[in-house]
Image: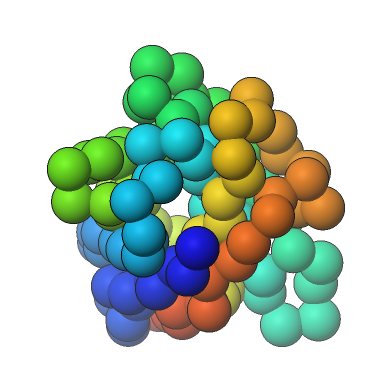
Amino acid sequence: VQLQASGGGLVQAGGSLRLSCAASGRTFSSISMGWFRQAPGKEREFVAAISWIGSSTSYADSAKGRFTISRDNAKNTVYLQMNSLKPEDTAAYFCAGRFWGGLTIRPNEYEFWGQGTLVTVSS
């Protein structure tokens, strides 16, 4: 499975962005998906995850109430809607997937990763 993240960019504080992650193959509906981010000089951190059928979601405390993860299995795509962005949200954002797995915040439990898409929030 190959993942392709897109949608990053430069936005002012308080603005919104929607990230997309498109997956190749016909197994997307079997894959739980997550979003992670990594700021310069920091470790990769969990942002949000969604189960393979989309019935369950999980969010980092920093994302709760501002970010929404969703998926469209017909389009093999997972989304991360980010509202009320803050300068501290500036990071490279990565999507990741794992087959049939439950929701997890641990990056080493994901089997495949997309390339990062850069989000820069100016103050």
